[in-house]
Amino acid sequence: MRKDVIVLCHGGPIAMPEDAAHIMKNCPECHGFYGASSVERLPTEVAITEQTRAFKGIGRADKLARVGAD
Image (cartoon, rainbow, N blue to C red; front, side, top):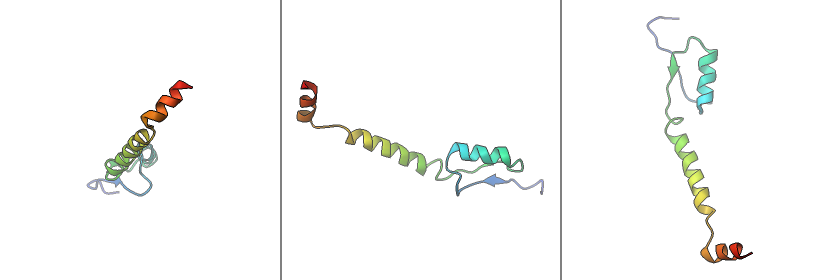
């Protein structure tokens, strides 16, 4: 391998920090990880989905009052 070349892993199945860690552990020639969607889009999608679920779980006041009365 050329000494003047920086080798990075990027994309495909490398979506989570654990994926990049696996590559770095098993590919000693790799110098690092270049993140794009895995550090911008994917975490945002997870956060938006979780936030939406939290809002969706809020019931109407009349339903909440009935549940509390039981």
